[in-house]
Length: 116
Image (cartoon, rainbow, N blue to C red; front, side, top):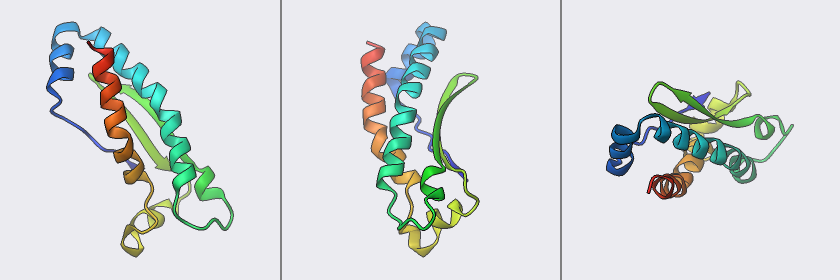
């Protein structure tokens, strides 16, 4: 199960994208590649469930992708039952969305700093 969070409307990033195009994309992708391993490590460390086999935890994966004029950081479960950890029991065992939300501010801060 892949979960994608889309943050839109950051005026500073949008303005720089219009002015500098490809250089902004290169910087944004570098930021994505920098944070993806940190996001994965944080998800694995903070997953709130009790391990039985360890496969769900070790199967958490994050990677940055560049698509057209977007950089996307995905965080997903490789195990087919990951969806149940994310949505069952009132999302008590959810790790994907909470981890991505925790990284929003540091990622945006880094992007803004890179684009000054």
